[in-house]
Amino acid sequence: MGRIRILSDQVANQIAAGEVVDRPASVVKELLENALDAGATRIRVEVEAGGRKLIRMTDNGHGMMRDDALLAFERHATSKIRSSDDLLSIATLGFRGEALPSIASISRLEMETRVEDEPSGTRIEIVGGKVMRVDDAGAPLGTTFIIRDLFFNTPARRKFLKSETTELSHVTALVTHYALAHPDKHFELHSATHALLVAPPVRKPEERIFQIFGSETLDQLLSMAAERPFDRAGLPEPPPWKREEDYAPPDPGFLRISGFISKPELQKLNRNSIYIFVNRRLIRDRLILHAVSEAYRNILPPTSFPVVLMFMEMPPHEVDVNVHPAKTEVRFRQQSLVHDFVRDSIRNTLIQTRPAAGFLAALTANPHATPSLLPAASPMPGEPESEPLARAEQAAEFALTPPIPPPQEVKLPFASELPTHGDGAAPAPPVAVPEEQAPSLNSLASLKPLGQLRESFILAVNDEGLWIIDQHVAHERVLFEKLLREREVERVQHQRLLMPLLVELLPQQMVLFTNIAKELERNGFEVEPFGPRTIAVKAAPVGLEGKELERTLMEVLEHSEREAQAQNLDTLRTRIAASIACHSAIKVNFPLDPVRMEWLLAELAKTDHPTSCPHGRPIVLRYSWKDIQRAFQRI
Image (tube, rainbow, N blue to C red; front, side, top):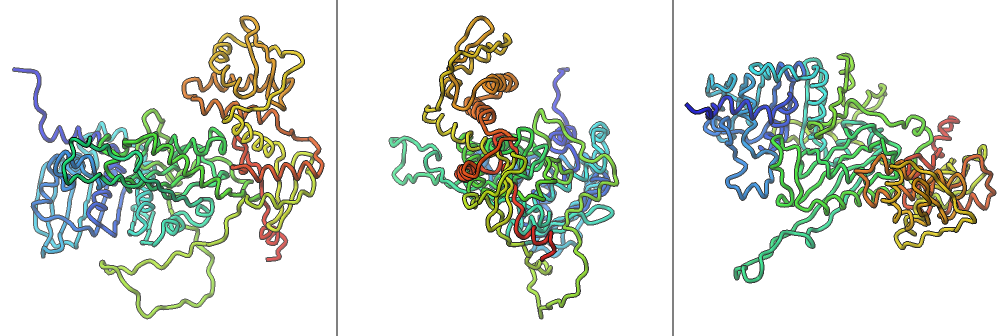
């Protein structure tokens, strides 16, 4: 008898479950996407023991007929696609036809479903992949799934689950993300003890953010919207001799980006607060994460990350979602175009808004990781998975609702009648999003300097309040952007030294120097080898001399040694410019006369990013007129 055998359907489903379902949040994700594909406008999720003991999901979608309900638990049975051509333009969240049979093979599953035209629904009970009962049942319109004892027949998989608190946090983050992506739908998430999320439908995405995270989070975010056509890099067309008479060129469509990005003062220690949706699908994509990091480069410190909630819309044929069993990774047909457009859109938003950091907020604006905002998908390959909460008593942090306001005596306006949705539920009242004009650095040019604080910080005023400017990092930002502009036209100002400066290097640093010598020359350096382990500096950019010149060269070499594999020409160029600017800028404890202070403020106002220095430190803090009045109890 041969050694190769065809596996049974039950074993094949359990193998597929290992790829699709790795934790309770994966089950919630598959069921949630099915509900959204079914047109549901109201989704309720209930979990017990972090999803190990019970997951119940109810939706008001279009439901399934009896035959479809039975067929849905067969492998590769789906209503989303018909042929291989459909894989090139997938417009639904689910399409593989593996989720339901995989979930049913490792749990005790019950499903009730009913379509609108049928007087009764269908109830199916499956245990470990075996159909136990199929009955008619009275059921509301839509579908209800009850998943009990997840991984009960695969103890090896159950052993790798985290604590109940950790699994609950992943489920909470997942439902929260999809609630943010679909503000026009009603989402509820309940645990055994309390409601974790209740999000009625709202009209705008910013209202959903205010609804879930409160006004403080919304105030730290900047709205972003951009689009560009795919006309110059659209679908390839057949040559003229292969076109038919009625041939019409395909519509290339548009690439649209909308969402919210954080101000530079809001910093995180990891990428867990970067949420990316492509055609309403939650993904974790290295290309987009790199584009976000590039957009914030030289604005945030290298070890800090922003908060991003980004929705990307593009024609289905421009993105391949069939590259990962859990559908958490995608592949873009035009990767460079998408990467550059995301990077430039975020960067342009930061340049146009130029947000100003408040003085009081900056005191507590240290980079931190928020345990309540965890990645809904599995970590990127090679990333360690963090244990978000170690104690069960910290589960209260997952209550995603604003703080309860103090009681007030007010008159409540009662309407005679409220319009209702089709399911009988009254719509949520409009969320009152605070509309206070965000502080901006566009008024830097109107500042009048008052003097210096310990010859290190410039104090200035205008109609908006009191401003404190770090003179060193302000001059550093001015020089940094000036060097980049001069580098683009290769006209960096330099000066020759009276005597060459000799710098001794280590053997590995000599190798690195050989690799970056041409870029150093384009940035105003004239350096040549002077022996086996010595270089002679004959010219340097204006402002660098003596020890600062030597420190600049050593700093560039150290960074190049640390990032030898990940460094490209653009990164090297900005790294050199940042080092030159840092060592050439005005130092602290350096007196400035009023004329030089006015010049520095005027030059800072002309920069693209006056918010922070190239290393991510804040430049300007504003003590607003309203804060001053409030501190003196004037308001």
